[in-house]
Length: 304
Image (cartoon, rainbow, N blue to C red; front, top):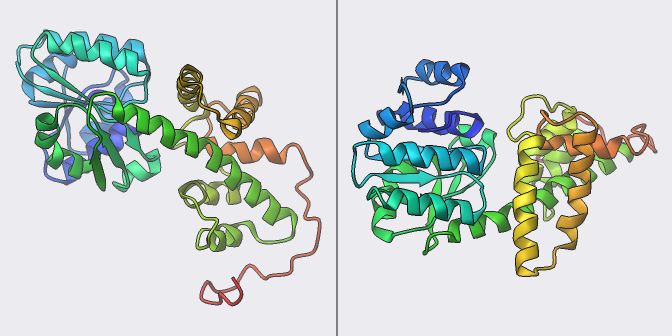
C-alpha cells in the first residue's frame, strides 16, 4: 500500500484483518506508525516496497505524486507486477503513469473507489475497476479484502469516468442533506431524529446516512473527506464536464458552497461542514416550537 492517509490506512487495516501480509509506505511518520500498530510492515521507500510484492495499491493526493510513485515502482526489480491505482485524478495523468509502468512490464489498473473514509474503515467501499480483464481477475481477492463490491468497467479510464459521475452525485447529495437537516432543525424537529427518519424514506441518500449524523451534531473535525481535498475532486469533475460539454447546473451551484467552506476556514473539516456554511446564512433558532418529541421510537412510523 503506497499512501497511508485516511483511505489508504483504512484499506491496509482491513487487508491485515483479512489475512493479507501488508507492506506499506507513506512519507508521513505518523502514517507509517499507524500501519505498524495495525499489524502491517513498513518499507523504507516505494522502490523497496514494489520489489517485495506482486500487487501494489496506491492511494495518492495528486497527479505529481502519482508520476513520482510510478517512476519509483518502474525502477523496482520485479517484472509483471500489478498496480491498483485508487486515487481520484485526471485520466490523462493516469494514462501517463500507465505508459510509464508498461515500459517496465508492470500493469496499471484504474480503480477509483466509491465511499468515504468512514466507509473505508468498515469495508463499505465499491471498486470501479478498469483495465486488462486478466489483471483485474488476479486482483479480485484483494478487492474483497478492503471493499464490499467491485465492477469490471472495461477499458482503462472507464473507472475514473464512473467515479466522476459518482462524485458529481456526492457533491450534490451532500449539500441537499445539509439543506434537509437545517430545514428540520428550523422547523422545530430534532435534527438527529430527522436524519434517522429521512434516511429510511424515499428521499434517502448515502450522504444523508453517512454525513447527516455529523450535521445533526454540528461536529466536523473527524474528517472522512477534508474540504481542501474535495476541492481537488471538484476541479477534476468540473474540467471533465467542460471538456464533454455536459450540462450540470446543480453541480455548478454546489461548487459555490464548497468554495465558501474554504473561505470560512473549514479546509481541514469534513465536507459535512457545508451544513455550517448554510447555517451561517440564516438564524439557527427554530421557527416553530417542536411538534415531535426527540424520544419517538423508530418503530412508530405511522404516516411516514
